[in-house]
Image (tube, rainbow, N blue to C red):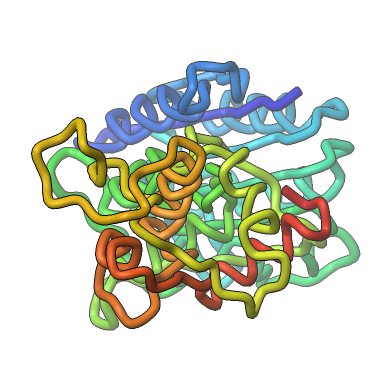
Length: 322
Protein backbone atom coordinates (compact mmCIF):
# COMPACT_ATOMS: atom_id res chain seq x y z
CA UNK A 1 0.00 0.00 0.00
CA UNK A 2 1.29 3.43 -0.97
CA UNK A 3 -0.33 6.61 0.26
CA UNK A 4 0.37 10.29 -0.40
CA UNK A 5 -0.71 13.50 1.28
CA UNK A 6 -0.55 16.37 -1.21
CA UNK A 7 -0.91 19.95 0.04
CA UNK A 8 -1.09 23.19 -1.96
CA UNK A 9 -1.78 26.57 -0.36
CA UNK A 10 -2.42 29.81 -2.26
CA UNK A 11 -4.68 31.72 0.14
CA UNK A 12 -2.32 33.45 2.53
CA UNK A 13 -4.02 36.61 3.90
CA UNK A 14 -1.17 39.07 3.38
CA UNK A 15 1.04 37.19 0.90
CA UNK A 16 -1.13 35.16 -1.51
CA UNK A 17 0.44 32.80 -4.04
CA UNK A 18 -0.89 31.76 -7.44
CA UNK A 19 0.76 28.49 -8.46
CA UNK A 20 0.74 26.24 -5.39
CA UNK A 21 -2.74 24.75 -5.81
CA UNK A 22 -1.90 24.09 -9.47
CA UNK A 23 1.29 22.37 -8.30
CA UNK A 24 -0.54 20.16 -5.84
CA UNK A 25 -3.33 19.21 -8.22
CA UNK A 26 -0.91 18.35 -11.03
CA UNK A 27 1.34 16.32 -8.72
CA UNK A 28 -1.63 14.43 -7.24
CA UNK A 29 -2.95 13.64 -10.71
CA UNK A 30 0.29 12.15 -11.98
CA UNK A 31 1.33 10.27 -8.84
CA UNK A 32 -1.93 8.36 -8.38
CA UNK A 33 -1.43 6.25 -11.52
CA UNK A 34 1.50 4.70 -13.32
CA UNK A 35 2.17 5.32 -16.98
CA UNK A 36 0.18 2.24 -18.00
CA UNK A 37 -2.86 3.36 -16.01
CA UNK A 38 -2.41 0.95 -13.09
CA UNK A 39 -2.97 2.32 -9.54
CA UNK A 40 0.05 3.85 -7.84
CA UNK A 41 -0.47 6.06 -4.75
CA UNK A 42 -3.72 6.41 -2.80
CA UNK A 43 -3.75 10.21 -2.80
CA UNK A 44 -5.33 12.61 -0.33
CA UNK A 45 -5.27 16.07 -1.94
CA UNK A 46 -5.93 19.08 0.29
CA UNK A 47 -5.73 22.69 -0.87
CA UNK A 48 -5.68 25.89 1.17
CA UNK A 49 -5.59 24.01 4.47
CA UNK A 50 -6.58 26.84 6.85
CA UNK A 51 -4.72 26.14 10.09
CA UNK A 52 -1.58 24.62 11.57
CA UNK A 53 -3.74 22.25 13.60
CA UNK A 54 -5.47 20.94 10.46
CA UNK A 55 -2.20 20.42 8.62
CA UNK A 56 -0.45 18.83 11.59
CA UNK A 57 -3.36 16.36 11.98
CA UNK A 58 -3.15 15.40 8.29
CA UNK A 59 0.62 14.85 8.51
CA UNK A 60 0.32 12.65 11.60
CA UNK A 61 -2.39 10.59 9.86
CA UNK A 62 -0.14 10.14 6.83
CA UNK A 63 2.75 8.76 8.85
CA UNK A 64 0.56 6.50 10.99
CA UNK A 65 0.22 2.83 10.06
CA UNK A 66 2.63 0.50 8.32
CA UNK A 67 2.16 1.28 4.63
CA UNK A 68 4.85 0.43 2.13
CA UNK A 69 5.38 4.11 1.27
CA UNK A 70 4.10 7.33 2.84
CA UNK A 71 4.72 10.43 0.71
CA UNK A 72 4.23 14.04 1.79
CA UNK A 73 4.20 16.83 -0.82
CA UNK A 74 3.82 20.51 0.06
CA UNK A 75 3.68 23.61 -2.12
CA UNK A 76 3.28 26.96 -0.40
CA UNK A 77 5.22 29.45 1.68
CA UNK A 78 8.27 28.42 3.68
CA UNK A 79 9.90 30.31 6.54
CA UNK A 80 13.13 30.00 8.50
CA UNK A 81 14.41 31.57 11.71
CA UNK A 82 17.04 30.80 14.32
CA UNK A 83 14.96 27.84 15.57
CA UNK A 84 14.60 26.16 12.19
CA UNK A 85 12.34 25.90 9.16
CA UNK A 86 8.54 25.94 8.88
CA UNK A 87 5.92 25.22 6.26
CA UNK A 88 3.59 28.18 6.56
CA UNK A 89 -0.19 27.94 7.00
CA UNK A 90 -2.76 30.73 6.42
CA UNK A 91 -3.22 31.30 10.18
CA UNK A 92 0.43 32.20 10.63
CA UNK A 93 1.47 34.96 13.01
CA UNK A 94 4.76 36.29 14.24
CA UNK A 95 6.69 33.64 16.20
CA UNK A 96 4.13 31.01 15.19
CA UNK A 97 4.52 30.76 11.42
CA UNK A 98 3.37 27.21 10.76
CA UNK A 99 4.26 23.54 11.16
CA UNK A 100 7.89 23.00 12.11
CA UNK A 101 9.96 21.02 9.62
CA UNK A 102 11.61 19.35 12.62
CA UNK A 103 8.17 18.17 13.80
CA UNK A 104 7.51 16.61 10.41
CA UNK A 105 10.91 14.92 10.43
CA UNK A 106 10.20 13.47 13.90
CA UNK A 107 6.87 12.07 12.63
CA UNK A 108 8.53 10.61 9.53
CA UNK A 109 11.40 9.13 11.55
CA UNK A 110 8.97 7.48 13.98
CA UNK A 111 6.64 6.15 11.28
CA UNK A 112 6.29 2.40 10.76
CA UNK A 113 5.89 2.93 7.01
CA UNK A 114 8.71 1.13 5.25
CA UNK A 115 9.56 4.18 3.12
CA UNK A 116 8.85 7.84 3.85
CA UNK A 117 9.31 10.48 1.16
CA UNK A 118 9.04 14.24 1.78
CA UNK A 119 8.93 16.63 -1.19
CA UNK A 120 8.78 20.37 -0.46
CA UNK A 121 8.38 23.21 -2.95
CA UNK A 122 8.71 26.25 -0.74
CA UNK A 123 11.28 28.86 0.19
CA UNK A 124 14.11 27.73 2.50
CA UNK A 125 12.95 24.12 2.16
CA UNK A 126 16.53 22.86 2.29
CA UNK A 127 16.36 23.38 6.07
CA UNK A 128 14.32 20.17 6.24
CA UNK A 129 16.39 17.34 7.63
CA UNK A 130 18.97 19.66 9.22
CA UNK A 131 17.47 20.55 12.62
CA UNK A 132 18.78 23.63 14.40
CA UNK A 133 17.98 22.14 17.81
CA UNK A 134 19.32 18.61 17.99
CA UNK A 135 17.81 15.82 20.04
CA UNK A 136 17.31 12.08 20.01
CA UNK A 137 14.41 12.23 17.56
CA UNK A 138 15.20 15.15 15.32
CA UNK A 139 18.98 15.13 14.91
CA UNK A 140 19.11 12.56 12.15
CA UNK A 141 17.29 11.16 9.15
CA UNK A 142 16.05 7.68 10.02
CA UNK A 143 16.46 4.67 7.78
CA UNK A 144 13.89 4.68 4.98
CA UNK A 145 13.48 8.46 4.81
CA UNK A 146 14.14 10.47 1.63
CA UNK A 147 13.84 14.26 1.36
CA UNK A 148 13.70 16.29 -1.85
CA UNK A 149 13.44 20.06 -1.61
CA UNK A 150 13.14 22.90 -4.09
CA UNK A 151 15.94 25.04 -2.71
CA UNK A 152 18.67 25.35 -0.12
CA UNK A 153 17.94 26.66 3.38
CA UNK A 154 18.97 30.19 2.38
CA UNK A 155 17.16 30.35 -0.98
CA UNK A 156 13.69 31.29 -2.14
CA UNK A 157 11.70 29.15 -4.57
CA UNK A 158 10.37 30.71 -7.75
CA UNK A 159 7.12 30.39 -9.71
CA UNK A 160 6.80 30.49 -13.50
CA UNK A 161 3.87 29.84 -15.84
CA UNK A 162 1.50 28.93 -13.03
CA UNK A 163 3.79 26.39 -11.38
CA UNK A 164 6.81 26.45 -9.13
CA UNK A 165 10.04 26.08 -11.11
CA UNK A 166 10.88 23.02 -9.03
CA UNK A 167 7.48 21.35 -9.41
CA UNK A 168 7.44 22.04 -13.14
CA UNK A 169 10.63 19.97 -13.43
CA UNK A 170 9.32 17.41 -10.94
CA UNK A 171 6.27 16.81 -13.13
CA UNK A 172 8.45 16.43 -16.25
CA UNK A 173 10.60 13.92 -14.36
CA UNK A 174 7.55 11.90 -13.29
CA UNK A 175 6.12 11.93 -16.80
CA UNK A 176 9.19 9.94 -17.83
CA UNK A 177 12.14 12.31 -17.99
CA UNK A 178 13.73 10.60 -14.97
CA UNK A 179 12.82 7.01 -15.89
CA UNK A 180 15.45 4.32 -16.23
CA UNK A 181 15.37 1.76 -19.05
CA UNK A 182 13.01 -0.40 -16.97
CA UNK A 183 10.56 2.51 -16.69
CA UNK A 184 11.17 3.10 -12.96
CA UNK A 185 11.33 6.64 -11.55
CA UNK A 186 13.03 6.95 -8.15
CA UNK A 187 13.64 9.89 -5.78
CA UNK A 188 17.30 9.77 -6.78
CA UNK A 189 16.60 9.88 -10.51
CA UNK A 190 14.12 12.73 -9.99
CA UNK A 191 16.77 14.71 -8.12
CA UNK A 192 19.36 14.03 -10.84
CA UNK A 193 16.91 15.21 -13.52
CA UNK A 194 16.08 18.44 -11.67
CA UNK A 195 19.70 19.05 -10.67
CA UNK A 196 20.83 18.88 -14.31
CA UNK A 197 18.04 21.20 -15.47
CA UNK A 198 18.81 24.00 -13.00
CA UNK A 199 21.95 26.03 -13.62
CA UNK A 200 24.58 27.15 -11.14
CA UNK A 201 22.90 30.54 -10.74
CA UNK A 202 19.39 29.12 -10.20
CA UNK A 203 17.79 27.87 -7.01
CA UNK A 204 19.46 24.59 -6.09
CA UNK A 205 17.44 21.50 -5.19
CA UNK A 206 18.52 19.45 -2.16
CA UNK A 207 18.35 15.68 -1.73
CA UNK A 208 18.89 13.93 1.59
CA UNK A 209 18.29 10.27 2.26
CA UNK A 210 19.06 7.31 4.49
CA UNK A 211 18.19 4.25 2.42
CA UNK A 212 19.80 1.06 1.18
CA UNK A 213 17.61 0.75 -1.92
CA UNK A 214 15.72 3.25 -4.07
CA UNK A 215 11.96 2.83 -4.29
CA UNK A 216 9.92 3.59 -7.38
CA UNK A 217 7.77 6.73 -7.16
CA UNK A 218 6.13 5.90 -10.48
CA UNK A 219 6.65 3.58 -13.43
CA UNK A 220 6.10 4.25 -17.10
CA UNK A 221 6.05 1.96 -20.10
CA UNK A 222 9.75 1.32 -20.89
CA UNK A 223 11.22 2.71 -24.11
CA UNK A 224 12.22 -0.84 -25.00
CA UNK A 225 10.21 -3.87 -23.82
CA UNK A 226 11.78 -5.73 -20.89
CA UNK A 227 11.84 -8.96 -22.92
CA UNK A 228 14.11 -7.26 -25.46
CA UNK A 229 16.50 -6.14 -22.70
CA UNK A 230 16.58 -9.69 -21.41
CA UNK A 231 17.84 -10.91 -24.78
CA UNK A 232 21.08 -8.94 -24.33
CA UNK A 233 22.85 -12.02 -23.00
CA UNK A 234 21.45 -14.08 -25.86
CA UNK A 235 22.89 -11.78 -28.50
CA UNK A 236 26.11 -11.15 -26.55
CA UNK A 237 27.10 -14.31 -24.61
CA UNK A 238 30.00 -12.29 -23.17
CA UNK A 239 30.08 -8.50 -22.87
CA UNK A 240 33.13 -8.14 -25.14
CA UNK A 241 31.75 -10.17 -28.05
CA UNK A 242 30.72 -8.58 -31.33
CA UNK A 243 27.46 -9.58 -32.95
CA UNK A 244 28.14 -10.21 -36.68
CA UNK A 245 25.67 -8.79 -39.17
CA UNK A 246 25.03 -9.29 -42.87
CA UNK A 247 22.41 -8.18 -45.42
CA UNK A 248 20.01 -10.95 -44.33
CA UNK A 249 19.27 -8.86 -41.20
CA UNK A 250 17.84 -5.92 -43.17
CA UNK A 251 14.13 -6.38 -43.92
CA UNK A 252 14.23 -4.16 -47.02
CA UNK A 253 16.83 -6.42 -48.60
CA UNK A 254 14.28 -8.57 -50.44
CA UNK A 255 13.21 -9.19 -54.02
CA UNK A 256 9.64 -8.25 -53.06
CA UNK A 257 10.64 -4.61 -52.53
CA UNK A 258 11.99 -2.34 -55.26
CA UNK A 259 15.43 -1.91 -53.80
CA UNK A 260 18.99 -2.79 -54.60
CA UNK A 261 19.36 -6.18 -52.97
CA UNK A 262 22.40 -8.33 -52.29
CA UNK A 263 22.82 -11.84 -51.04
CA UNK A 264 22.12 -13.20 -48.53
CA UNK A 265 18.55 -11.91 -48.78
CA UNK A 266 16.47 -10.95 -45.75
CA UNK A 267 15.59 -13.82 -43.40
CA UNK A 268 12.66 -13.45 -41.01
CA UNK A 269 14.61 -14.79 -38.04
CA UNK A 270 17.52 -12.43 -38.60
CA UNK A 271 15.23 -9.47 -39.31
CA UNK A 272 13.50 -9.99 -35.94
CA UNK A 273 16.86 -10.06 -34.15
CA UNK A 274 18.00 -6.97 -36.04
CA UNK A 275 14.91 -5.03 -34.94
CA UNK A 276 15.79 -5.88 -31.32
CA UNK A 277 19.37 -4.73 -31.86
CA UNK A 278 18.15 -1.50 -33.44
CA UNK A 279 15.92 -0.84 -30.43
CA UNK A 280 18.86 -1.47 -28.12
CA UNK A 281 20.97 0.87 -30.23
CA UNK A 282 18.28 3.59 -29.97
CA UNK A 283 18.69 3.70 -26.18
CA UNK A 284 22.47 3.61 -26.19
CA UNK A 285 23.12 -0.03 -25.29
CA UNK A 286 24.47 -1.17 -28.66
CA UNK A 287 26.51 0.58 -31.37
CA UNK A 288 27.48 -0.47 -34.91
CA UNK A 289 31.18 -1.09 -35.56
CA UNK A 290 32.90 0.99 -38.27
CA UNK A 291 29.57 2.36 -39.49
CA UNK A 292 27.41 5.27 -38.42
CA UNK A 293 24.10 3.42 -38.74
CA UNK A 294 22.96 -0.13 -38.05
CA UNK A 295 21.52 -0.36 -41.59
CA UNK A 296 24.96 0.03 -43.16
CA UNK A 297 26.50 -2.31 -40.61
CA UNK A 298 24.12 -4.98 -41.86
CA UNK A 299 24.35 -4.22 -45.59
CA UNK A 300 28.15 -4.09 -45.41
CA UNK A 301 28.44 -7.25 -43.27
CA UNK A 302 29.95 -5.46 -40.29
CA UNK A 303 29.01 -6.06 -36.63
CA UNK A 304 27.71 -4.34 -33.52
CA UNK A 305 28.81 -4.35 -29.89
CA UNK A 306 27.73 -3.35 -26.40
CA UNK A 307 28.39 0.13 -25.06
CA UNK A 308 29.51 0.68 -21.47
CA UNK A 309 25.86 1.28 -20.56
CA UNK A 310 24.97 -1.83 -22.51
CA UNK A 311 27.45 -3.81 -20.42
CA UNK A 312 25.77 -2.50 -17.25
CA UNK A 313 22.37 -3.78 -18.39
CA UNK A 314 23.94 -6.99 -19.74
CA UNK A 315 25.25 -7.64 -16.22
CA UNK A 316 21.83 -6.93 -14.69
CA UNK A 317 20.28 -9.49 -17.04
CA UNK A 318 23.06 -11.98 -16.33
CA UNK A 319 22.50 -11.59 -12.58
CA UNK A 320 18.70 -12.03 -12.96
CA UNK A 321 18.02 -8.46 -11.80
CA UNK A 322 15.91 -7.64 -14.83
